[in-house]
Length: 270
Image 1 (cartoon, rainbow, N blue to C red):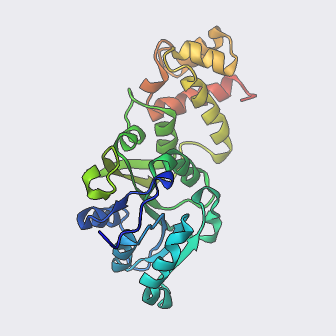
Image 2 (image 1 turned 90 degrees about the vertical axis):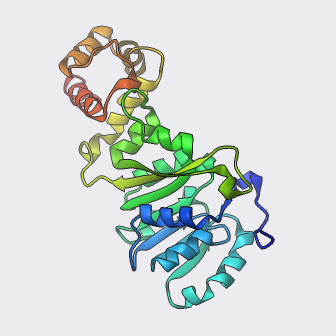
Image 3 (image 1 turned 30 degrees about the vertical axis):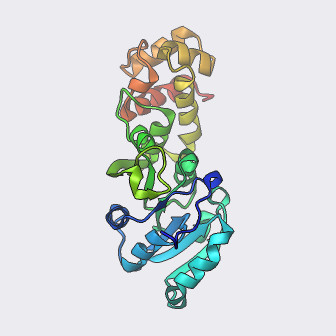
């Protein structure tokens, strides 16, 4: 791998060169001819090459400016044909409004960015239709968790997306190998959100209150987090057919929606 640039630990760089895994990422995003794909952190372009071979139009956003000249040289023909461009920038401050509706995101991202990126993609007014993200296996499982193992991260993701898991990618396939295995996390944008857009902030205020004291029951966490009398919380849970002695991680997305519906009805200031 003498042609592989030196990975910078500070940027969480781990280069993936396994062809099967790279193909699986394209397949997970259902890449088709002329799709506009935002690739976050192209590195030295192994995934980029596969995306272009799948006939996508690739916008590569690279934070590490030292990698950009080589990317421009490597994909000069694709750029001349209008199928590739690379930009230097940070996804955390990226303007998603410049992308066409229905674009896709495919990325092997640094582990430390995962939660932040999911939030950004979820809340932008111009979200992708699908995102295929190669992330830490444990985090992928957390995002896709079912009732019993839910967290604020999984509720956030599943509020906006249909979440599924793709193939697992062993650490040994990266250079340098990370300490843990990875997995493809597939986010398909929901056609309809669980509630009107105007209620989203209030919904997540309720969710955050529920998870604010993870080891405590809903009765205690919602009472403390929302500053409600316990009798009010008990009535709220009863109306939603939810036992107030349960914990937040056990609720399904449907139960969160029902709980919120009654929360708004009983506390107009929500």
